[in-house]
Image (cartoon, rainbow, N blue to C red; front, side):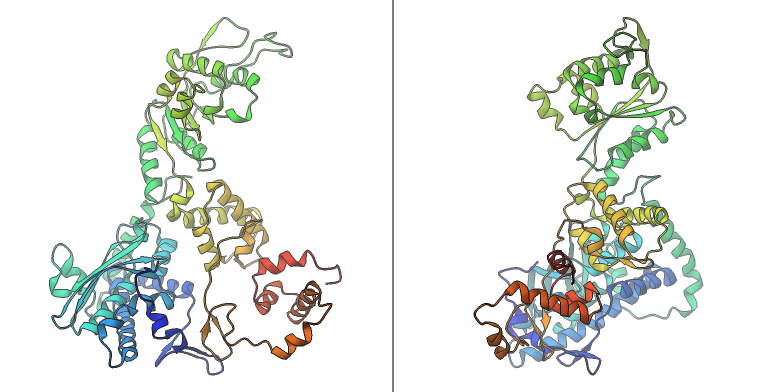
Length: 567
């Protein structure tokens, strides 16, 4: 998130032109500093190894100090760029450098800088933090902020500017369920309160050679605490919304109270209902599930309450309904908001008396059933509109549990993906390397109208399409859906970055264009010729051909449908 009121210092100092990709020499330069283009997955793996080997506290201190050095380097770069100008004018280049380097999207919330008085106080917002994403993918949701290298970077950057020791602390972090990451910084001496002294110690070098054995217990405790945060049984989740819903369900498991599960289609209401049954005193008795929306209105009463022989045409024998089949156990009525008014009246009577009457029968039968209902209908509105009985609504609404949609449970996506990959890799006998970083980002950015059901279907498709031992890519996941794409800077012929589609460094020869643009020019024919040439050069590799042409793989795959059979 870039504040429109904040000057774009990257443009002002033409910093993109200082980033040079010297591929022949195997070097990348940001002005005088040599840079490295690393895989985020590899850096995340190193981070994970440090945590597992050294324990959280030691690894955190090491990562903070590593980031501190990086921030100092960028501060020196900013000072060189400003030349004889005022340092205050270039101070906010730090957050924008963070953005250019692909670490995070930073925006200024508040900044006070007075170099003469040695005063600084600032708060900044971070979005798309690579380190928070790495923490979530490797360890799930935790209780503490986890952007340790970037906290070190911010501290090192301002310290180098101020020539005074400045320390940042993370007050919000995506890795613990917050909507974004927020940091606050000020001079180290001004930090007070609980944890201030311990936090400052992370910046101090230390010798840990003789302490590795003692850290093994800390690592075990960390793993145990992280494991406890996962959902119990087949319910998976660590997000705040999931935990709130799960805590309510857990407290109701040992009690006979009627539970009403609310949420959009596909959020896993039946999974919650099954967990209630499997973890309660009725677990050895039947669990009967009914999708009320899938039953015709004229059959729902006979399905729920049973029917006697001769009750209506076609009723050639008596049979029990779902209430009788669930006797002693749990009856799950999904999409209960869609049942008919007559069925609503009978259902209310069962809840009040514990007795049912089969269609065509005057004899009552006693049933002992734990009822769990679910709906994606706004029942309160349905009551106002006369589509749902008020007395039944109040009976069902004794213990409502709202299950949030997947778009509000982004922290749960890595865990769900892991479970679904494990499930379908075994089904299709595949060995997978996991998801690409782009695929993970696309899953996090998607709106999920179909919720967890859609995610599961998407992962099954990906597992089916991915080559043996390969990574699941974006095009393996999204069928008929164009995921949100990200724009970025391209590299022109001189090694500088330029906006895609700009004329800077355009390799196309003007004379070649003049030769093409003659009367009778056929754009479609030349497009087909270009695609043939690209596919021939890449020996039929569609992904490579797409990169050669500067389009996405999905775009070239779509155009392939329009090419002749000889392509």
